[in-house]
Image 1 (cartoon, rainbow, N blue to C red):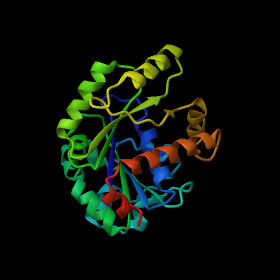
Image 2 (tube, rainbow, N blue to C red):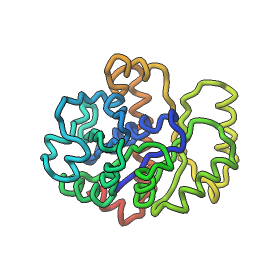
Image 3 (cartoon, rainbow, N blue to C red):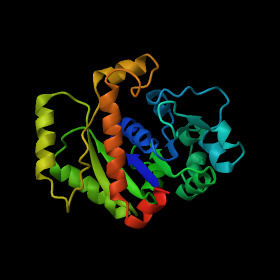
Length: 251
């Protein structure tokens, strides 16, 4: 099962959402967060130390190194793994790495049930390649752009996506008026035009403090809230699967 977490605008907390989902799914089944963001922020959020010379997406896909030298264990998730980006992703020659079929094949060989992809913002070619093949696309936004704007973005993604497309509202801002607008959007959105993820996702100041000190938000601060959000997100994703795939992923 390949899930893409994407965005049209940077700074909306898409990597945070990808980490939450990975952490939740990895409580029960082998789950990979494949980081296609060149700066590799996923490692920071999950507090995964990246050693010099360790394998990357490229080595994982071409099989030149075993999973033990490419997959980093996520210490706070019993079945979670992190895959670091490769520097080729910043160059046109890195586009072959953005091949969903290659990712699926490598993950299956490594015994991984879930793949969460975190990419650069749309409409980058790498992100579009995963949109067209993902089983589920999560579009992350953090502002109350307005129903018309979000509906237009949803239609664009749906036009290219093979799987379902849902919008995740990441409440990373504490402005009361912004929160009120998001609440209104949630209440008035027509599910036929805009599918919204019902899970409340936010990014509190203690998360930033944990990252500043090189620690995982899943182990410090208000970790209970983070774990609850992570579990709720994973449960909701399970519910989006067709019955046949749901049975397959639960094996």
